[in-house]
Length: 407
Image (cartoon, rainbow, N blue to C red; front, side, top):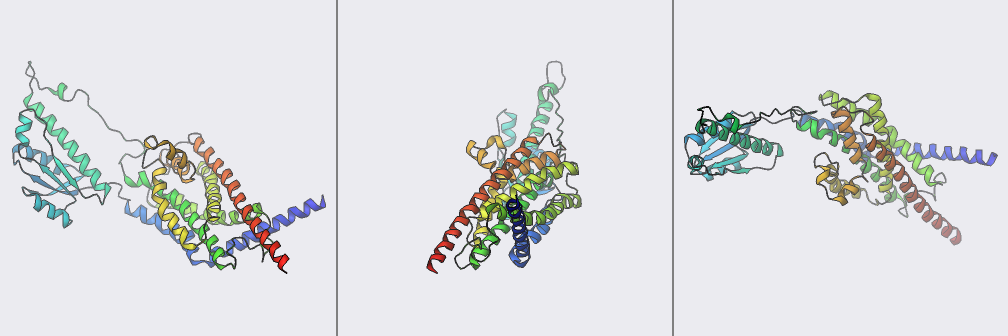
């Protein structure tokens, strides 16, 4: 009994020692300070500031009108009257319009072909060619929606003016038998910030943690004589994988608990982003996400040997994780293999759950599936990281025995 009590106290002492060592090492590394504090502080502000307007208005377009008819001019007026597009020039020369695109005076060209009016009057389908600068998806969205809506409105107006039924009444029922009213739930303005930022904020938490933890691990390897992650030869406190994992994880959780308050509460409040979740439910949801991120980071750090590797890892995976979140790219359109891969990453259930909680106003019962997956990820990566450190410990113990034999 005394032996067990002694082992328990010794274990707590080792966990405390590892936590204190890891916590202090965070503040001794400038790169880690930048990743743990500066990036989570500034990146959410930068993204939120850039997309705070939610939607883009008056995207500039040049029209090449090769028909120069009353219908083509009516079509141009409809485009220019929209909130999304501003027609900055009308020309008959494609090269002149292309020059405007190169000079950034406009971001798209629409070419109305010769015979536009004639084809419509003969009941034939006509074609408007559209060229866009794809450096901004927001501009492209405005141009596509506006051109399509203007074409529909023009066709409807033409039929109302020319198709008269036998009773002499306008063919309104034939043209538009059902009047649609578009109501967007949860994001009425169709804004980019409300749509994308919840995913970006979750990814900032995950990616900075993975990068920072990996950088700390790589630094220990680089400064070690035998490039070992665990200083078992010089420090006897690192004697058990669970002690190492728990000691390190407490240090990271303490730091990122504060980071989460800033990223998930303060930033949405500053920029008036949707925040419909109750604070208690949000905390209960974020807890397993934070644990999953910590243990995931510790597991990944077992395979990082150089500080630069962590930067390359994040540069390669960040965009992939955005798509795997299922928010920017629908889950139903993903191949089956990528759907399974996506649920190995904490940001996937984290992002989907945050959107359902904070943007859509669902309760914890609505996101119970994602909540369960996060707990499973936390448990799984706790096991994997412990196994990883157990393997490293065995290697270190073997080195110790070899050194004892040499002595």
